[in-house]
Image 1 (cartoon, rainbow, N blue to C red):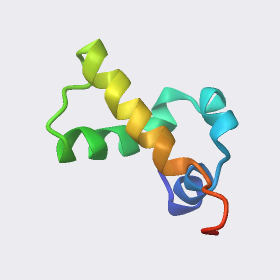
Image 2: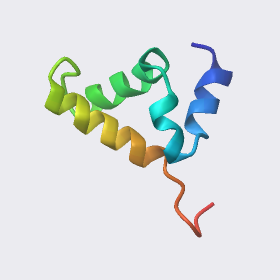
Image 3: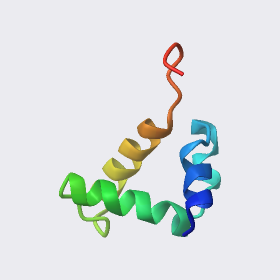
Image 4: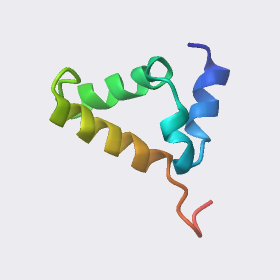
Length: 64
């Protein structure tokens, strides 16, 4: 994945997460899984990683 694609994913609004193909989200999810010792092949761990990733993309009013 090139850096432009990665920057586009990081700047997406929270409502657009469902439109991102898993192949584009996987590098971010793998990083989160490694950081939190999660296994993406376990559904519960995948959901946790996805939630952490979604929260990281959320825009918080007043900060930006």
